[in-house]
Image (tube, rainbow, N blue to C red):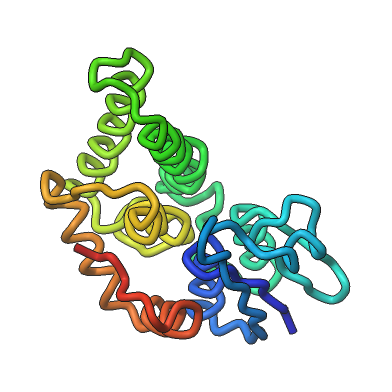
Length: 213
C-alpha cells in the first residue's frame, strides 16, 4: 500500500485527490507546518533532502515531486484512467495542461508571492513584469475553460488534478481575486462537486474550507 506523506496546505493534496479518484488504497502520514514560519517540519527533511511534500513510499520506493508522483501512480495503478495516450485527439492538450501547472502557473504565483513580501514600489519593473505574467497565465486558463469543460477537453484528467491547487489552496499564500475569471470559477464549482475531491480535502485538511470561489 502507498504511504503518502502529506503536508497540510500543500501540493501534496494532489496525491490524496488522485488516489481518491482512482480508488487506490493508501495510508496518510500528516505533517503540520510551523505556525510561525509556515515551513515544513524537520520530519520531512529527515525523510527527503528537500524537506518538502509530497513524498510517497511504495514497495520500498521513495518518490518526491507531485508531478512525478501523479504520473507514477497513474502508470502503475491507473489502468488507463485519468491520462490520455498518444492515440487520443486530446493527447497534446492533456500533456500541455498537465505540465502547465508547475512549469508556469504555480511558478509565477510563487514569484509573485515572494515579490509581495519585499514591499516593492508599485511601479517596480520586476514586480510589474511578474504580475503581468501571472495575468497572462490566468487568462490562458480562462480562455481554455471557455471552450472546454476540463483542461484536456471534455474529460476530467490528471491535468486538472495538477492545476487546481494553484487556483485554490495556493491562494492562502498568494491572495488572488478570481472574480474577473468567470470560467475559472465555474470550473472550480465543477471540481468542488467531485466526491473524490471532497474526500481528499476532508482527509488531508479537515479544518480548511476549499477556496473554490
